[in-house]
Length: 353
Image 1 (tube, rainbow, N blue to C red):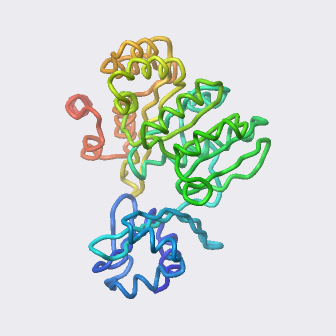
Image 2: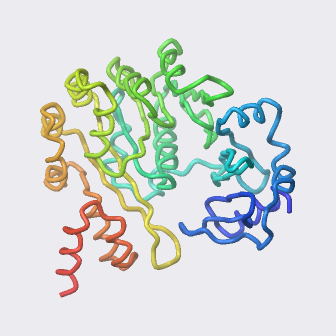
């Protein structure tokens, strides 16, 4: 079976990912669960043959040195795919993530108006967080599309790899891919201010250098969008601040309190229709939230989000309860994805009394 055929079958079955590993049949992820695409176990020679068109000399050398390879490919009339090739037990393995050809409109994602309003700002930091496969890239792309359509701006994206292909609308969009257009996130962020951007989108804030650069760019009057692998707003702030040395954390908290616009945390939860429903937490950096961040009272943020409904804030667990009340997800899945399992369990039990 050719790679093109497997990817086509994957799209037909509405799968999000394809996994190729020696000793296992090809597997696809459908609604969050892995199932066999077929029953033919892959052997080293067959997998190398399947991937050979994407393993040139430089990529093979990089793999032999213990590195992963990230890039994207497209199959005309099928879809685009984000690709990660890596080594396991001495053999090559690969994961393919399906990417839509077109960037979705923000209003089609079912996100609250408070998130849309964040794009009206000309400077500051917007963070989009969640685990792998939580829809961060899709939300980021929709936000960039809205900004591009509504402004005459220069937008620079830094991605690993490039996922969505943007059209030049009212704005000019330059997309830079790690590995082919620039060495790393931190390297590209160091030079981005010389490229006269209005908006900078960072695929992932991976380390102290990229986090510090993103804060600096926001502080100098630019709009910055970035992603982090965290599950809620408080965890995002702690992750960002704690990445820095202890003696720098007070300054970072102050900088973050002044420049953060909002945090969007996402989870995609399996639903009763065998699809997935979006649960979301939204933090808007109001004066009260600024004080909490600056004074290192992050543990109080959850309560302030609860009292900030008028500002468009939403707690993750309240979003999960709404999905449950709407009959979309089961009690078991609601508890599995909760931030505070005990509190959510008590609320669900009181609903069922």
